[in-house]
Length: 183
View (cartoon, rainbow, N blue to C red):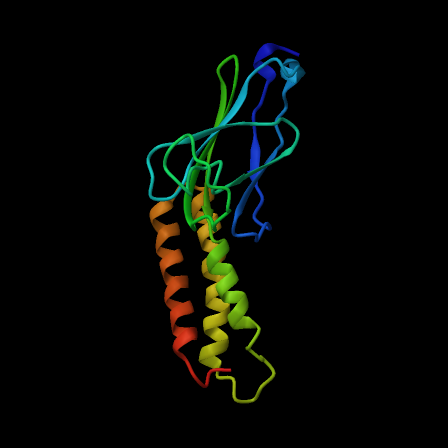
């Protein structure tokens, strides 16, 4: 294999619903960079920031990031705050780089906090209840459809549309929370 056959790739783990952790699974084809002497780093730009935070990146592993190593707890590099807080929902830009100029950048629109709010609402929803209106059922289905739209639009770099669908999900959550006899 040639030096140019190296392919850096990774997947954000969508199924990780721990609001304090962002998990990135390395699925790269490292070829000759198998030795640990080559530097591998990940730069993550969190929502509402334009400054990427750099961390070391382990090949062929799940890399976990939190509010401490993403400098969300405090904004200085010598942060001693160790209590993990929830990571914000929104657009994350993630770049993995290895020595030799190999790099891959992806965008990930995190919706974990939104999904956990929806879970709480679902726990009180009985779809078999005869008092459940068609509108409420439709709103639940719309919420799920909007979530899938966020993922799809992010994959195809249509971030404005993804943000719009996120806002529509938030409106539905607020509507569900205000409704007293919906379930």
